Image (cartoon, rainbow, N blue to C red):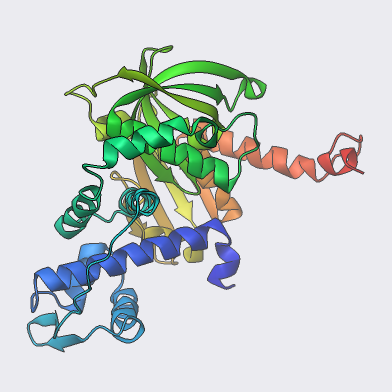
Length: 351
C-alpha cells in the first residue's frame, strides 16, 4: 500500500510543510557553519533517516540551484546569491508579516536571520504607521465582518484588524461564536496577545475580560471585531509557551492531569509518525516486525483524540485504558453509522 493511501489529505500537507521548513533550516545551518556537518550529522540533528536528508540536499542542489558542495569535513555553499532591496506598501508588508509568522509558528522556522528580516519589514511602518492605521480604522465596515459566512476575505480582514490591534496594544470588542452550545454568540472585550496558525486555521491568544483569563480563540469564529480606544499591556510574567503548556497542538489541557500514553502503529504509518517531532515528551521504539511503539506524556485533549482517530485501524491505543475505551467507542459509533436501518443515518436524512 502506498503512503498516499495510508496518509491522505492533511497528512501530506503537514508532511510537505514540515519538509519545506527543514530545507530552509538546512540552508541556514550549512550557511552558518560551512564544512561542519556531514549527512549523518544532519540526519541525527533532525531525527530522520540519511535517505530523507539526501533527498532534501538534492532539492537544495538541483531544485533550488544552490551550489552545495560536499567535502571531507562537511557540506558548504560555494556562494549564495545576493538579492536586491525590495519595497512594500502597507498591505503587502502586513501580509508578509502574517506569512512569516505562519512559517515561524507552524513549521518551526526560527533563526537570527529570520528575526532580522522581520524587523527590517516592521521598520517599513514608521513614521507613516500611526497615520495609516488611523486611516484604516476610519474605513469602518471594511474591517468588520458582520453576519457573514467564513470566507477567505473575512479571514484576511480579521487577521489584518487583529494584527493591527496587537501592534498598537489596543483592546478589541468581538462577537464570538462558540464551537459548543449550538454556536451560541457572545460579546467579549479582549486584549489580543498573539496570532498563531495551526493546521488550516488561525487562532488568537488573548485575555478575555469576561472570563478574566487568557483564552485561545479561533479567528474564523469571530463574527465581528471593533478596535477600541482603550490600550492594554501584556503582563511581564506572561509566557506563550507556559500558556500552551504540555497539551497537544493549541489546546493547553490546563486543568487536565498529564498521563502516560502508549500507541502502537502499523509499520507504514509508524514510519511516517516516527519521522516527525509531534510533542516534546514523545519516545519512539521500532519493533522487530516494523511496528512502532509511540510514547507520550500529556493531558488527553479532544485534539489529541482526533489525531489518533485520524490513523484509523493503523494505530492501537495500548494505554491508558480510559483513552483506549474512548477511541474504541468513537470507532464503534462510526461503524454503526454505516449499519443504521431505522432511518436516522445522515445519508437517509438528506435523501
